[in-house]
Image (cartoon, rainbow, N blue to C red):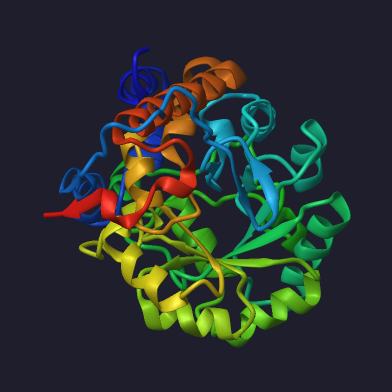
Length: 357
């Protein structure tokens, strides 16, 4: 396995088609899914020369937590679809790589079990439920378990129409449960219907389409933890989030899985960074597959990137070791890219290094 794309091909061979469709697919015609990747190829590197790069330092921090490189492990749902060890394997590999994992509300492992499998800083990704008491119960569980941040997803008031899932009748296998949704009495994903996947039906019954900026302040008050708002692609939305207490912003279109033809995340990043103007840390996800992608994102103002699907590819291929290999491959690519771009540390990855065509 020489790169992340090699892991993608092998994972597709291993994972059953309906489960692969869920992991790999996007909304509708999957325009945004492809655009997230293509947008990185339109950003070119104006590399520096005659810089002593014999020593490089990839380390940074996210909301005060040191990490070994500007790559975090994104919240991805139902990881046991990829491997029986699921989220616990990913947590152990993330910790071994010196980075931070975000555990999804729709995990197939309970919040406490994930963090106990690999103790240390970890964030919890939250979907707000229509019943706020059930949301509060989830937040309370995360706090008791030792999570150090809450990542509130705001771009899923309803679930995007993911036609791969509908065609393949995707639902969660009977032996798996959404352990955290079980807190709300909805851990079992129903069978698919003719016009909706099981997950779409699950979302309709739980998730709140009335989420507003005041809910950010509510989550911060209830949790007592930093709140990172995920799913923003506009500067004005980022400002509203910060004004209501967000300490971090994730520029994200949900991996192309929500609104098709939405702006690529990396294209939206500079506007959000400029609008926030240092009042919150900014992160980005969507389409990151190479070390040069990470370099470009940091140069455009991201504190770190969130890596999603490639982590699941590694998990499917070789469990914990596969996730570790994916993260190590990306680390090596970042290191080489920094050296060739004339950057000795992440603070030298500045906007003048890139040109957007």
